[in-house]
Image (cartoon, rainbow over all chains, first blue to last red; front, side, top):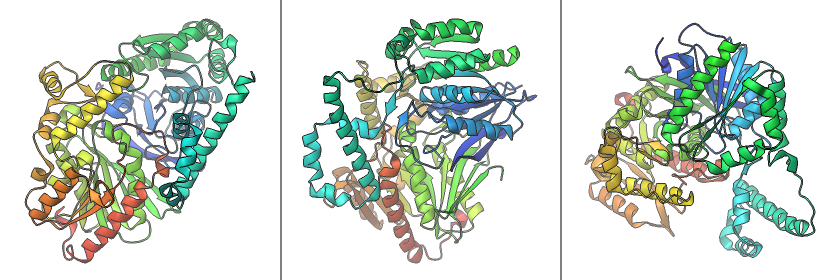
Length: 309
Length: 300
């Protein structure tokens, strides 16, 4: 069995996910197929399913050399898929797309699944695994325990005071750009986000709590993270967390949450749960040697989980 | 073809994804074409590399789709050593990028028929596009760096800004980068993207004009400027090409693609993709009607 597969084992595919068509690459097993599909999903941000340093390409080819089918894909609004994405939000982590990816792989001779996701993709795979019993494990790379959100409208709205936006809205250059439907929509989004932020200030001053899925008992962790995690562990699925040893904020949040309900969930999971670290940073721009180490860890984990049945 | 095909009825385009190439290591590519009409011309899209490959990717997808909707057949591909293609970063340099662009052109003609073929180079992708287009092919240069040294200086600056934002004092100069690359066991990266000595040397020692060469061919330059005036580096490129007898048209942009960093705004909200596609399609239509009459992509 070769150490890794190549494009000779790969087939580009388009498959349906609701109204959208997603793009992916299936890597077929090099040796005897295990009948297990490894689904790979990147984290938040506009990107593509191969990623830099061929990270997901290499990971897919590595696990396929171990007898697994692999699928790396673009969720809707990203890479070579159709659709659009306005925000990368842990409250809406593309889980439906992961479920569609699993359905598609069932047509390729796969009946069981192991899911690997990075950051937001980790949340997406976790939520998807909680909906599909055929998912036997989730490998989460630099998983966020709280609900994060990346959106340009929020970045912009936070950047300046409301006066700045009023002056800017009255400029001829801005008014001229309103001819574009897309730009109208973008301006409206920034404006409404700014107004929401302004409105939230007096509410906070009056001591009103903002709606949130986080409670104090959770140590900062979101129920949207804890509940699917607890659910899949209870049904016997395997869970692996990996963090970068230089990602102090991300690791710190995980450790703080571990001091509360997350800790109990992980203890109840017993040997199904693994937590490891790799040298370097993987929470934002990933160190290439850390990527290599994660590929090794994923290859080792899928082999062990498959062997455990 | 062992690949995938998607028909987008609302956009009136077809997308075909596949692996191709004559060597052991194959190239991944996607072809975008009009669904119901014969293509007017072909465009080989040479993407940028390193962090810009990722930062530009979605915009590139939207631009390719928009060009196909305007009647062009577009061949996009991942250089060997990057993306979904075979190979590894140590295989990637200007020569390999150029060879991949030429193979992409051959694939386009093989699949779409004998259409006139132009090369579109985005940022440093302008370098392989420039070399591959030397036999008289129309050339579209989108935000090209004037020379490799400046390209890497910009990359280093972006890398340093990122490091500063993340409370790191690690500063990398061009000299230090080269020194690191010369260490046999070094694992050097810029903004997380691995870089090899071969790639660095093949680009750092050259200039865009040198790679374009002396053979005049229709050229469209999309570059930064304001109020109808190109920035000095773009103007120098334009002037040098005109001096060499190139028929050059210029499209001035007020805003550069983010290129080094991935922005959080939906690329669909940025008008650049549609504007670029329209500009290229209009320009190519004129080339086909005029200068390119009688010249087909058979020898692409």
